[in-house]
Amino acid sequence: DARVTQTPRHKVTEMGQEVTMRCQPILGHNTVFWYRQTMMQGLELLAYFRNRAPLDDSGMPKDRFSAEMPDATLATLKIQPSEPRDSAVYFCASGVSRGSPFFGPGTRLTVL
Amino acid sequence: TQLLEQSPQFLSIQEGENLTVYCNSSSVFSSLQWYRQEPGEGPVLLVTVVTGGEVKKLKRLTFQFGDARKDSSLHITAAQPGDTGLYLCAGEGGSNYKLTFGKGTLLTVNP
Picture 1 (cartoon, rainbow over the protein chains, first blue to last red):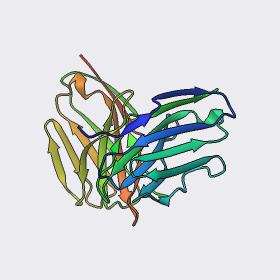
Picture 2 (cartoon, each protein chain N blue to C red):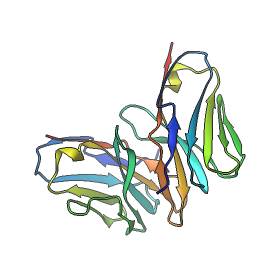
Picture 3 (cartoon, rainbow over the protein chains, first blue to last red):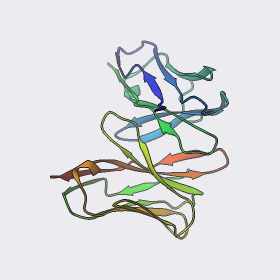
Picture 4 (cartoon, one colour):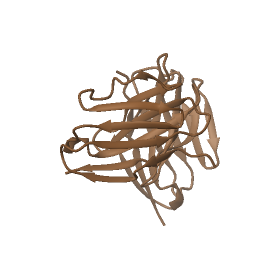
């Protein structure tokens, strides 16, 4: 049963610390998305990649957030420095071209 | 910016009742997707509708795409506690396959 995996599932950190979230997309999927979910804003697209190339990161605060795909089996989302307003659930999703994305279980981030 | 408004925001009903939730926009979408999300999990795709006026059924769930491809509805017949969850609609528009999500309808079905 192919699934998107995300680590860690939960992260509590202090303001100013660096946070790295990792995602392993489903094997064979060529599109990877990063979303952030909060009660106020719902699901927001932060960035997405196709064939490991960034296509759109307009939803991401560029001064502190960065997203990369070092290889086809790993996507990372980094926040440096983290702020309390970054507290949210971060989802990675993968898909094939125009197919519907499959979501991972999310990383719940709390920044104190 | 394409926005999707979902209503109602919260819905609590008894087992066996019927319900309809709505997803509306002023924008036209090339397709619209419905997801269900359970606590602690990511959204799971239920259905994709593509053609204006299209109706799709998934057991007790009926999905409809508006004729103008700006709105959609989800109707659940004889709701069960297992239907409890956050129902999200997402519209696809533009050339780069970007999904815009609504904020969801949180459904609670009480036994």
